[in-house]
Image 1 (tube, helix red, strand yellow):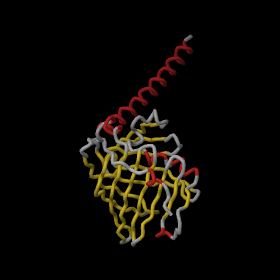
Image 2 (cartoon, rainbow, N blue to C red):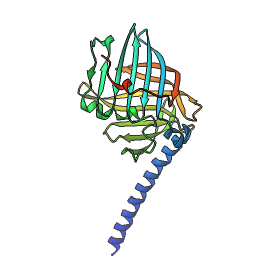
Image 3 (cartoon, rainbow, N blue to C red):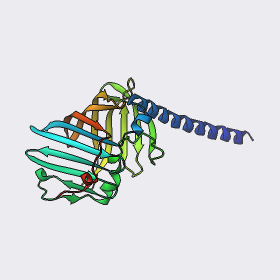
Image 4 (cartoon, rainbow, N blue to C red):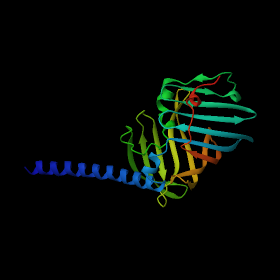
Length: 241
C-alpha cells in the first residue's frame, strides 16, 4: 500500500510539473503578444506590404515583401539593375533570381512549399498557435549578448522548427533560429530583430532586421515603408516569366 501511495504521489508530481510547464509557455506567449500590440489587433491584419533596403557585399539591395494572410507571400529583390522574386502559396512556390543566373522562374520542391506556410501568415505563428496546429514549448532562459532571454521552441504544423528569444524586459523578439533544408542538408539560420515601432493599426513591428546571407554572413535590412491591409491582386502570387 505504501508503495502504491508513493507511486501515485510521483505520478501526481509529474502531471503537476507538466501542467505548470504548459502554463508557463502560454504565459510567455501571451506577454509577447501583448507587447507587440495584442492578439486582437494582429487578427485584423489581412495583408502586409513592406519595403526595405540593405547592403550585401557592397551592393545595394531593395526588398519589397507582400503577404496576404492564408493566400501567399512574395518577395521582390532588386540588385545590380536586375529584379528577381520568390513566391510562396499553399499550392506552390517559385523562385526567379536572375542575378544568380536563373533565366526563368523555377518551381520549389514540395517540401519547401510545405514548410513555407508560415511565410503567408500575417498574424505570426504565435497568434492562436494551437488552432493553427503548432506546438510551443518554454525552454527556460538563455543568454543573448548579455540578456537572459525567454526561450520558446515552436514546432510548426508543417514540422518546421523555430526557436524564439524574447527580451525579458520588453517581451520583444530579438532573435530567432530556424532549421532549414539547404541542398539536402539541415542548417540553422539566425535572424535578429530590433528598433521596434508601433503602427497606427496598433501593432508593433521591428524596423531593423539582421538576415543570414550565407555561412558566417549577415546583412542588416532597414524597413522604410509599411502598409497594412492594402488590397493585393491575386496575380501577385503567380510567376510572371
